[in-house]
Image (cartoon, rainbow, N blue to C red):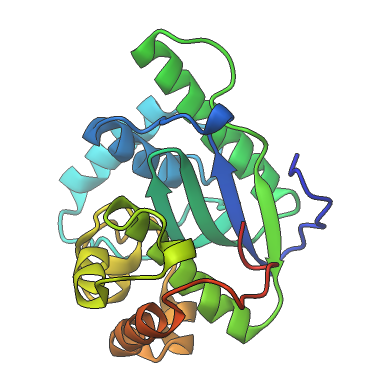
Length: 237
């Protein structure tokens, strides 16, 4: 269950934060990040099917119809629409819309539990990998735009530690880094094919005025917001 007492309502949008127990690093190499991406896609379904079975089905589908586009409609019974995401070494940010009753909770249980099983086997550990997730209800268009930028800007700390308190020193370098950081959804929003099948982007692309609007919004956000001090705290951690 979420740590906060937030009512999770269908067709509403939420900022989700899933943080590692003790803030320890859980994504230690490229394979761990890929596993997180894979899990984000595979566990977002109410269909009772194993990952191994889904792999077999996908391989069969590719042989039957190799012309199917990667952005074709998803026919799975989805719990949520993943609108945006960012994977950091010790936590994950998600912007999601709930599609089913209890969809967010069920997805997070499968997602977090699946990653814990993977990590425990790989690193010979036991117990929980993550704390209970935190969900924040996003209520306005302005909040959606802010959290879209904030989630993708989280990766800035990898090249400018302490930027949230000290401000951003090299905006141009930061923007270039964000556009090429592989483990979040921003590249897909600005026209770089990354993990297109994971996110549902039409809603935010329309709101942000397309890929060009996403780029411009991020540039302005990075340059103007430099230091986080005047944000609505319902949007962030």
